[in-house]
Image 1 (cartoon, rainbow, N blue to C red):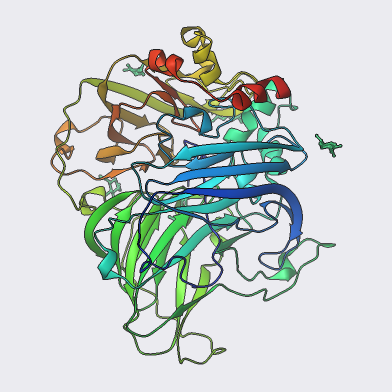
Image 2: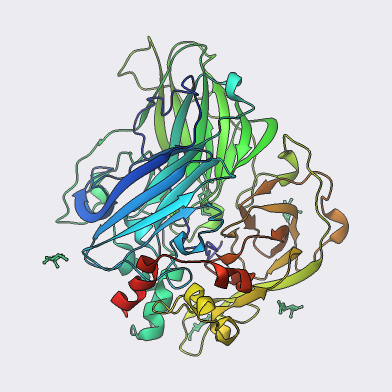
Length: 540
Ligand SMILES: *[C@@H]1O[C@H](CO)[C@@H](O)[C@H](O)[C@H]1NC(C)=O
Ligand SMILES: *[C@@H]1O[C@H](CO)[C@@H](O)[C@H](O)[C@H]1NC(C)=O
Ligand SMILES: *[C@@H]1O[C@H](CO)[C@@H](O)[C@H](O)[C@H]1NC(C)=O
Ligand SMILES: *[C@@H]1O[C@H](CO)[C@@H](O)[C@H](O)[C@H]1NC(C)=O
Ligand SMILES: *[C@@H]1O[C@H](CO)[C@@H](O)[C@H](O)[C@H]1NC(C)=O
């Protein structure tokens, strides 16, 4: 049973979205394509909401949970005005965005920016020139766990699958806590009393059994389990997806969990994977799809079953959760065919295919749609992941025995502009690359928990995943590996990723975190907006 699991890019974690019903989110027939500027206004504030019937204060975007979905086309400019009314500093990270030429808009506290102070507006402004797919925007630190998440969808005018589906549906999966993440974290960090170090570190960790799980922000909760004095309403309602018989749906599935991995499925319906994190794949039929924190898949589902109601399921992978998770229910939603009774409960008909828990879908079954020549590696790196007590008895995550401690008041990118990138202390876990490199990183996980891993500003090729602490170099796939941006490093196992250092900027690999500073000399020639520089004066 896993004790600790850290999403590598905790800042960037998550993401998700908004659609509460299966209303098509984009009319793909309107395809006249001229890149345009899209302006979004996001107000970050606390409101009382009860997604599953249990009322709590959630940090929200525009008072909604999940937050609004941002939809743009590949090539568009995205302008996001963030109005912070949270009562504390915040930042908005767009998970998976390459941020080419605009590293300062990555939205990560302590790495690429200082926080947006309370009662202040900051504007993110970037172009999504060379990517498409399903991403998320979310708050840095753990605020996303408290509600600050929404989907970010980049439609592809050149989508090779465009003729193979009729409508799109967004499906956001998440675990859900009834307690504020700050309180969860404080409890995790005892026995430390909450000094400076603890305060800075606490957002790296989020380990507790969720109270519930949600699909598109909805689920029921058994209020008899709520603590006395809480406001709770039974049968708050499940998310409902409308299917028209014979139509083909592209489901964009996002996992915005803090911690929980799921198996996603729809009773009686086969799913065909076509895209993973911005890479098209050959069609790949699955019944049950494992999906880890921050991963995203697109699947095509055809409404080819008899007119009826069916269960959509998101099952917690309990093997990789703390004790106490065993009693968590399967999270469900309803797939309602046009013409089926509105109120009859679907008959359960779960897929029974065995899937091993706590590891990704086998990467070798994800074949890139377009063959691409894999670049030869120019450099190899090995990094060892471990969790153990520090001198205060607090369990922390270590990368090669260095635990990441951010400096929230002097982000690393600012240090680069000041010419101080080589002065960063060891606890920043910074790696600096001055040259074009193709790097093979071998992660050796000595921990008994799996850890999802993500690199900002890049996709990477997944060359291999295996058990044990020794990489099996003969088992690496160098023929047609899948390119994605979030991968799971198995418990007591290894993962080898290859990526290209070609994006001047700062890139966090997160949670258990290391920072990649690519081409600092190029960075220094860039012109960050004065507003960005000013944030650090305001928060210091
Ligand atoms: C927010 O900022 C405005 C102008 O900067 C100021 O007038 C107002 O008093 C501030 N409100 C709070 C609650 O701090
Ligand atoms: C969501 O992410 C969590 C955290 O890694 C993972 O444990 C879970 O399996 C993911 N959910 C799905 C549906 O994969
Ligand atoms: C991390 O530690 C491993 C094992 O001690 C070592 O082989 C490797 O070179 C180290 N990596 C870096 C980047 O220093
Ligand atoms: C951490 O320290 C506590 C007590 O200080 C001990 O009970 C626990 O076993 C230690 N855990 C690890 C992982 O070393
Ligand atoms: C790792 O080991 C487990 C059980 O020991 C096995 O089921 C699994 O297939 C192995 N995974 C890989 C990638 O070899």
